[in-house]
Image 1 (cartoon, rainbow, N blue to C red):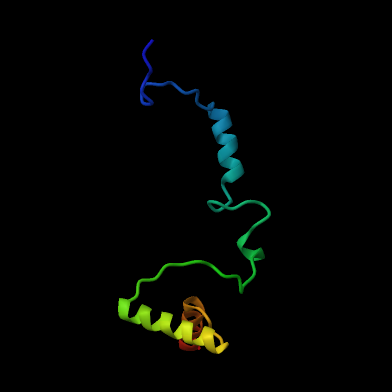
Image 2 (cartoon, rainbow, N blue to C red; image 1 turned 90 degrees about the horizontal axis):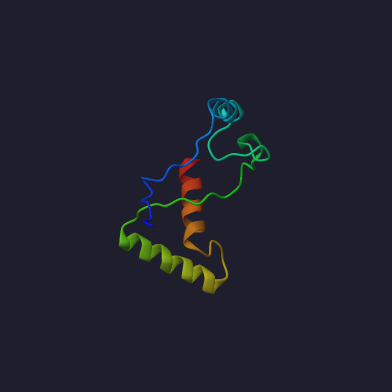
Amino acid sequence: MAIKKPSERRTPGASEAEADALANRLADRPYGSNKESTPELTKPDSITRTTISLPEVLLRHLEDLALENKRAGVTPKNVSAIIREALEGYLK
């Protein structure tokens, strides 16, 4: 008995009525959200991860500053906090 390739396998599909019912249930919801978590209910000060690109020299300078702050016991003590403070100052 030969094993069929995934492209040759037949998978049962949903009926047209089932597909319409699912589309109606999901129509007003943004992708990836659930009923308990809506954008209006999230905290305005919650932290979100992002990625930025920096010149290597600038990153090394930020890392050195973060290490100096950590050793001195002053804030900000990490690169993210330094960048956050700098952006807040820039945007004010």
